[in-house]
Image (cartoon, rainbow, N blue to C red; front, side):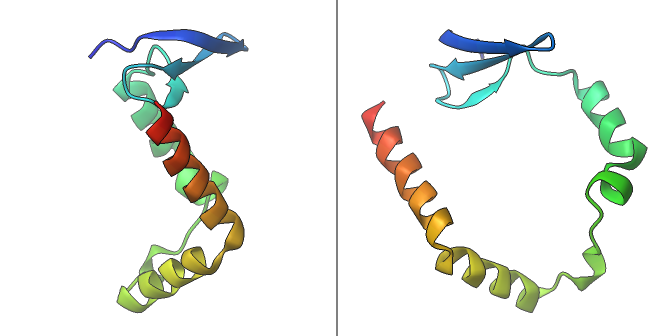
Length: 88
């Protein structure tokens, strides 16, 4: 799929586009899969964003969803995204 865009931002050699094809803002061109895999293999989950995955069960997910549903900021953002998506 070709990602078409008019608007973009560049910083430190990375281009972020406002994609007319998919409607998302994202890096373009995409980072090669091997490079992404290397980033996650190194130490992303242990150093950059450690998380104890053993704690995740149905109750954990249910509680997380409730926190998200009750979060006014996240609800506002969701409504904003839905509204703007309709304008496209």
